[in-house]
Length: 121
Image (tube, rainbow, N blue to C red; front, side):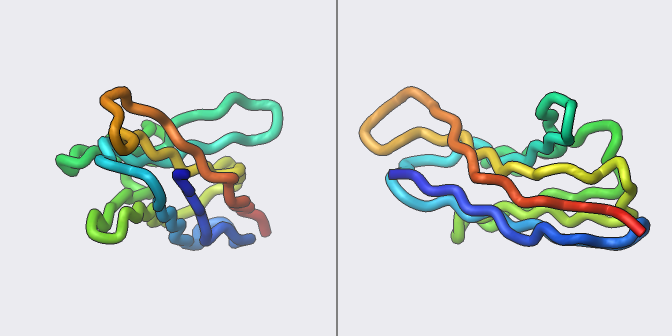
């Protein structure tokens, strides 16, 4: 099985910082990319940031300059460093792992259960 576990969500004040972590484990042959998505009540899930195995990063326009994604390949872990947080950043953040399962050539997406980030005074 493949397991994806996020952590780090919390209640923070506007302008504060937070770091999310996501670790992938299980029957994974190669991780092609890892990323963070978020979903606020009444809104669709959106991509926040992603990073490929070649360390190419992509950010949503709304978080550029404030969020930084990084990856520890040895630990199959991805991080999202969030700074200058705004109330609009409030959402459930989900970790996505795009990987090739062992003994298969078709890439699959795996998701964590999500971690709540609330930005409020």
